[in-house]
Every structure is written in structure tokens, then in C-alpha cells.
Amino acid sequence: MQIDRTLEPLRAVTSLFYPALCAVCHAPVTRGDYVCQDCLGKAQRIVAPFCAKCSEPFPGAIEGEFTCSNCAHRSLAFDAAVAAYRSRGVVRFVILQFKYSRQLHLRHPVAEWLLEAMNDDRLRDRNFDCVVPVPLHPARFRERGFNQAELLAKILGQRMNLTLSRPLERTRYTTTQTAFDRNDRMENLRGAFRLRKRIGVRGLRVLLVDDILTTGSTLSECARVLREAGAQSVFAVTAARA
Image (cartoon, rainbow, N blue to C red):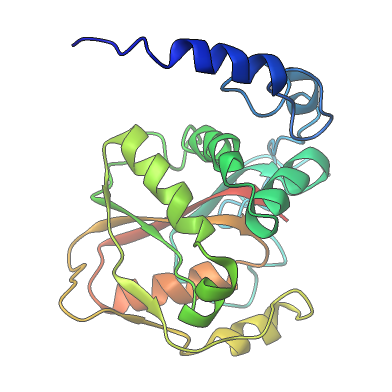
């Protein structure tokens, strides 16, 4: 394949006047990087012990699998929801800049955090048939201009050689979840998703993708719809855990 060299002078000039900077501290970084190594080193990794169902870390000493208070006394439809990092500091800043400030290039470091989560024992050796993003309501999509989960799922699917599928649609515009406790979140989301017409998931092993897991209510409602449509399994992966 012949490489087009005509743009190289332009790229050199652009690099001179617009150097690549860390999205967090604005230190110079190698072009193609988005967050410097110093800032990445401050990201708070989720380490054991944590809830086997939702990845909620536990500060004490527990050996073996356990279920956290977030998952106790309620039925979550996903098999497990896995996250690599806590949504704190650097991680939260990058995700919010990507999600709410239209810094779309930051989807790349966020997707790298998703890929790190795929190394978790609950996901590493599993085979998936498709990657499915949590959908936005059309009104929210018009407000934001993009679905952050779909952008992340697209990168993840390409890196893992998985088909990107969009079997879910959001049918009800829900108010923000941030002010609700876990029970109110589940009630707020009840009936908010449905399966699209002419898109089947029967027998499929689904990898559900979103940016942040808080209580798991959104992922659980999506997983419930997929399970009721015949999905064989639904595991969820997010870049961060609140």
C-alpha cells in the first residue's frame, strides 16, 4: 500500500503549534496519547476483595466471593458487572469530560479502561457473540449529540473482534438517576427499555457496555429485557464503578 506523504508537513506544523497535552494536567504527551502516565498512575484500581456481582470494593479482609449490600435483597438480571477503576479523581474527570463536554477523543482512554476490565477473571475466558451498548433516549441523544456507550462499545468490539449490535431502545425519557437511591433508580427505569423489532438475541452471549456503574439498575433493566428475549447470558462491563 502506498503511503500518502503529502500531509506530513502539515502534521509537523500542527504538532509544533498545537502540541499534544494531557487532558487532566495539560503536561505534554506523545501524540496519540490523551492522559499522561503520571495522571494514569493516580487512577484508583479496583482490587479484591470486591462484590462478585457488581464489583463494589470492600475495605475489609474477606476471602472468597461475597455479595455486597448494594446487591443484597434484590434480583439483578446481569450475570456480573465488571469495572476496572473507581469513578474518582482522574477517571471521573476524564469520563465526565468525554460525556458532557464533547471531548470525544477521550473515548480512547476510557475504552482502554474497558479493555482492562475484560482481563477480570469473570470475563477473561468467556466467549461473547456481540457487544451491546446501553441506549440513550432519542431526546437525550439530540441533547448530547452522541451515545457515549455506543462509542465505547464500537471500540471494544473492534479490539475484540465482536459484532456491535443495537437490539435495545430506550422508550421512556427518565429523569437523571443521580438523586435517587437504588430502589428509586430501579423504579425510575422500570419499562424504560425494550427490544427493537426484527433484532433477535435468542441464544446469544451478550456483553453489555456502559461508561459508569453506580447501583447497576440501568444495566440490570437492560439485561432483563435481553434475558426475556432469550439471551443465553448477559455480562456487563463498564470503565468505572461509582
